[in-house]
Length: 209
Ligand SMILES: O=C(O)c1ccccc1NCC(=O)[C@H](O)[C@H](O)COP(=O)(O)O
Image (cartoon, rainbow, N blue to C red; front, side):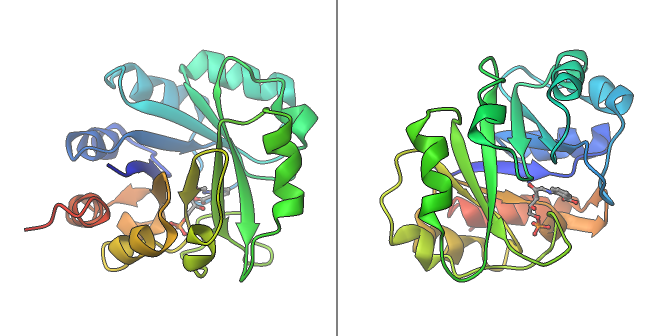
């Protein structure tokens, strides 16, 4: 069954709704973003969530000490490093599930990803769509078949522009370990739409009636 992360959680109601519909992981953005959440808010949300739900903090080129401080304070279980963090940087977080994001356009630059895999400093790869001057949450897709054409040595997550209308195709073409969505399940930035959330999870998993 495909693993699903709902990213850009800013409030408890959305976190509980996504969890109830079967999301495996929730993402909390601590980088500059329309979906940015303060550590105090994230901590309150995370405290109320069941242990089986993965709590992933999204950071962009943040200081190692600050990432560790926020992760510990909020009770994060994983870190999504969404900037230009090096393999050495990634290896500072051995106690967390480390997801390294790479932004792709119409091909995958395996040479830039390989050092992270060889050094075993990450647990998962997230492929998100490259859009100049935007770090994430772009709502734009990339050709998913380029994921499925490659043998991956670590679990791969497809992100970028997914929604209930295209999730099933992304899973079929890309054959990923998981999918990640932010804007495609929102009413507005930072506020999720329960109808879109439910439809997305059902479609990604091929559970729709
Ligand atoms: O979502 C953001 O606003 C964001 C800002 C800066 C860095 C990362 C960000 N999001 C990370 C994610 O994991 C998103 O889910 C991913 O980029 C896909 O977003 P979308 O295309 O809106 O589904």
